[in-house]
Image 1 (cartoon, helix red, strand yellow):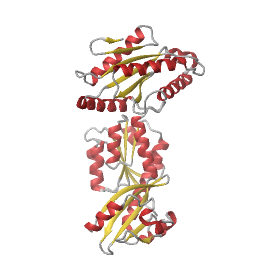
Image 2 (cartoon, helix red, strand yellow):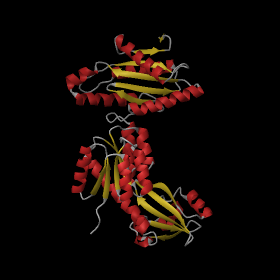
Image 3 (spheres, rainbow, N blue to C red):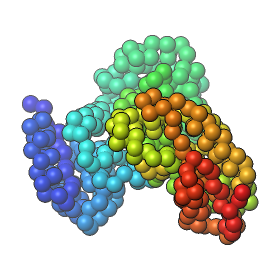
Image 4 (cartoon, helix red, strand yellow):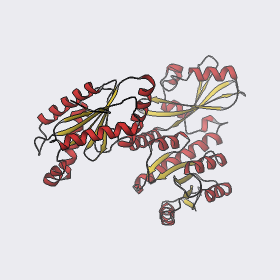
Length: 404
C-alpha cells in the first residue's frame, strides 16, 4: 500500500493546529503538529515530511527561518507559509526562498487543500527525478539529453509526447530558448551539479533542471510542469500589491513605490508630485443606493482616472474612497493642472444609478527639506483644505504657502 503523505503543521494556535490536523487526516494525509519553531525543527530531524504548513509569526523563531532550517534537513520538503498579515516583501521573500505558496488567513479551506495537493505532487515528482535519474526512459516527467554541439540526442517517451518537435528544432525550440549560455557554461566547466531555469511554452511554465553528466559526457535536462506554482506566485504578488476591488495598487505597495521615488528624487533632483483625491459625499451613495453601487462607482472612477493620467503615473487606492496618484517628473503646476483636468472630467461623467459625482483634490510636490512623512502630510492637508472650502476643487500646497 502506498504510504500516505506526511504533513507537519506549525502554528502556535492550538485550535487551528487541531482543526487542520483533523481535516487533513480525513483527506488522507498523516499529520504531526508543532507549537513553535524549535519543536518543528526537532520534529523534522526525526521524521521526513512531504510538506510543512508554517505560520509566519511564531513565538520563538520566524516562520521563514523555520522553513529554511527544515529544508536544510530535508531539501525536498515543500512549505506553505500561512499568515494573518500579508506583506509584498515577505511574500516574495518566501517564494524566493523556496516556499511553494503563501496563504493569507483566514483562508478558504478548498484553496489550502488545493495548494497542499499540488505541493505534495511536486515533492513526489522531484523524488521521482532523483530515484529514476539513472533510468530516464522510465521517468514520467520529460527528460532531454544534448551533446556538445547542442543537438538533441535523446528524448524519453514523456518528452516525445509533450514536445514532439523538440528533436528537430533543438535549441530553437521554445522550451530551450535562453538556455544556451547555461549549457555553454556547463560544457566548459564540465562539473557535475544541477542548475535551474524557467521557461514558457505557450501558456505553460516549466522548470528545467540542467546538469552535465560526466559518465556519458552530455547535458541532461529534467523538466517539471510548474504552471500551477507560477499561478500561485502571481496570486501572492497580486494579494500583496493590488486592491482587490479596483485592481490598482494598494496602499502598502504604493507606499513602497513612493518611498523609492522620494529617494530617487533626493538623489537626482528631478521634480515629483503626488495627488490625493476623495469622492465628495460618498457615504450618501452607499446609504442611498447600496454598497454594490458604491463598489461600481469606485471601479468606474478608477477606470476614468486611469484613462486620463500618464502611463508612468502610479494610481493607488489609499483607503475607502481616497486615492493617490504619484506623478514622477512633474512639478507642482503640472500636477495641479492634471488634477484640475481630472476634476472636470469626473464632474462631467455620468455614473449609472447616481448620475453625477464630484471629487476633491489635494496636490503637493516634493521639496528639498521633505521626507516621506512631510510630503504625505502636506498632500493630506491640501485635500482637507479642498473639502473645507466647499469640495469639488483642487488645492495645492507648498512647504510654506498655498499655490494658487
